[in-house]
Length: 239
Image (cartoon, rainbow, N blue to C red; front, top):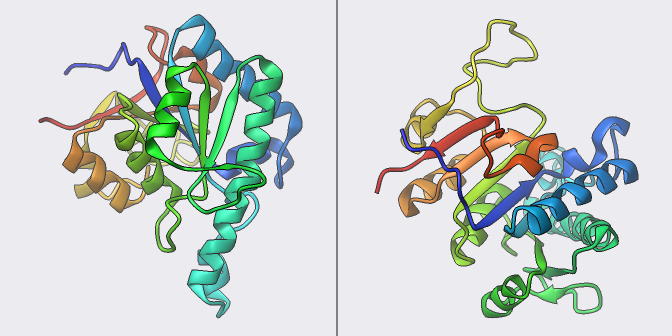
């Protein structure tokens, strides 16, 4: 099976929970700095173009508020605002580490972020900037996983990289089962059939339909993307 070793442009999906790291809430400044240096390494040392989609789960989840009787649409819009907070933090950390960034939002927040306009985003990428997409898709009932695949397709990315706390997709929870086996590769159709929750089903279905591959890896290893040292699970689709 063909592995994906030489992407030129990647979409990096970061969960909001990843930004809280060990402190269990909010944004961990030390981890943010650590992460930013790895992104800069990708751009400067591996000549990759990087687009980032960031979630907001460390701040707010609309679906959780809905469980308490709150309006889901309002809750989802509050979650979108959380992604903007995270995106601004990620953008500043990457700039401090040495690469120019642009935060682009699906919902209008002119004083803190540019509107997401595809052609403008492409120009930023071509100029070597890291584009950070926030605000989800701008619509309720759509996750940032779906946004990651959508933006990856819109911006011509070769692969969507899902950075997590584990080094790939396993046949069972590796934190609970010592005999868990990591998949080297999977077909997107298998992920749908087996209901493997690496991303939501809408995101997987879109990736499968439009033939954009996914790579699932440990967040600490993102600086190895595109090298032989990369460890993770490649999720592909046959054209």
